[in-house]
Image 1 (cartoon, rainbow, N blue to C red):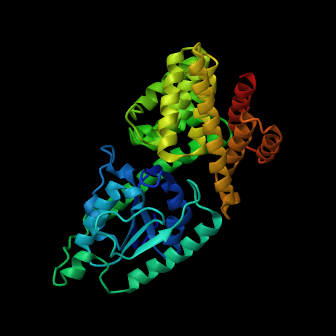
Image 2: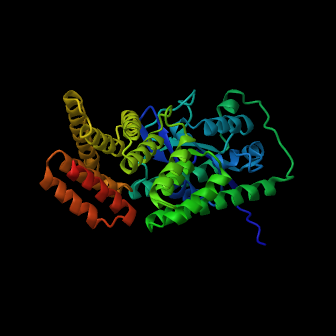
Image 3: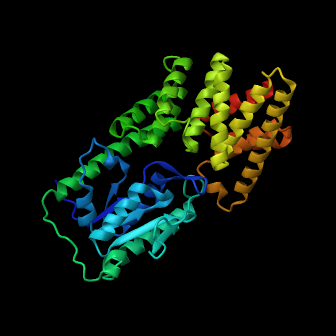
Length: 409
């Protein structure tokens, strides 16, 4: 067996999609790792070991402190104020005087007393990272890592202000075993997630359920994994559409949507409840959907929660017996659809819009909302653009179901 002798770069960061609640924006931290950090680390001649939240689970015996002490370089992504990453950054600063690189998404604020720390900035495009920005950030981070290894100047505020402090030193025992455990855990989780995403792209929902179930066993309760598993479960419709929805509702309840401010959790909880209402005719389910979509839209002002909130309002208006309630729901629907159209118009002005990973969903939502407010000709044009983009079958089905709902009402 060939021994990998490259210096170790230990990466501390969040896992999956995380929301910065001050910004009302969600960032895909896995995209940050894949598109920027991992290739930059390898380009700098280092061996990447990711200390994501997988390694905090009870399933994996991982000696975090040893890695924070011994790693040749540590990269800490503190985007969204991730508590684990911030804590581990503090431990690293206490253990090593230099070779620590701090990075974050450009728009979030620096938490705690970190304003004086040199921080590498990058920018997300929606939840993902655009091609141009990924290339720029990858090259710049690689150069920064090389410079960090060559510099003898302290980058830790602890050793900057306490220059006579002596860093601790430990033996080599178990170090390689720790590294191998981390890599094995990382590879297993990555394999599950890649299989799950691939299954979504090919509309093989039963395969996606199996993949995310495996990931959920590795790291129980991780919000991103639970969200993807719940989505795949209700899309799978096995053993029946209603039973799949009930199972998905049980899964998403683990994330406590009644008290959550996570727009991803709220959007999924709303989708499940909306579909339960369609299947059962139970108005309670529709009211829950409005509650969840409404809170998600308030938190993030995003097009997904917004469109679905408006659809639920117009659906409920058709069931009301009180004229005032009918008017309230109808006016609320129109107001939210119009707000979503404005949100999307602003998104489409951004120079990197065509690089967004969610571009197809944005086109679909624009078509839907324009048709809903009576701008049928404009809506038809966006529908054509969406269908030409070649979305997966399950996405097209969701789009068609939404259009049918509007047309029927």
